[in-house]
Length: 276
Image 1 (cartoon, rainbow, N blue to C red):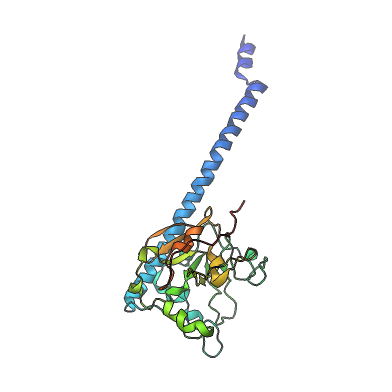
Image 2: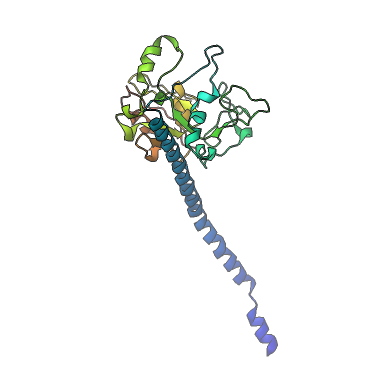
């Protein structure tokens, strides 16, 4: 009798297989939801970091009588000077360098990209849709603005209060497109300050007739391809001059106000395909 009761307490092979199958089915059902929940969490952190950068810029403008810092190069060497670039200029106004990072594109120097050849180039400084830009701090400090800073966000360089050097024949016209003062932004809820991106800055152009999209390059015209990337399900996040942050579908990038002359328009017919 005792032996019979002990046998009844044991599972049969079929019962075990049924239990395993049910567990496997539950895992298959729950994994997409968990993956989506992780992406939602990363998305929220990304926007929070961007809002902190937006707040830092607001505090900077309040401290400097509404004036925006220029895009500055060393007059002798034409090199960008680290102490004049946005990461350093705004550093007193944000608490942690981590605010420059999107969790969906963490630092990974060995998986960076070559700007000139569009091929993998470790330690190049250029990021991708899933890797941050930046370089480790060198043993011997240089004038370079990049070493020691890592980021997943791209600065709308039209927010600079002008440039201290000429760029071809269009310099005067381009200089007019820069925002000299923070309060001069007319469409604050549609003028990006930072977006997800693969480089530190870009001059996005959406004037009629000025848009092109090279099909084989991620760099694009004037850095357009630096932000037209599939980081958040065929969209990127952006923080705007009014302090708000939101998701922007890639075609809608051309419908925003990037500089003083921006004209919202339809996107080019050729955009990068969604990632598999």
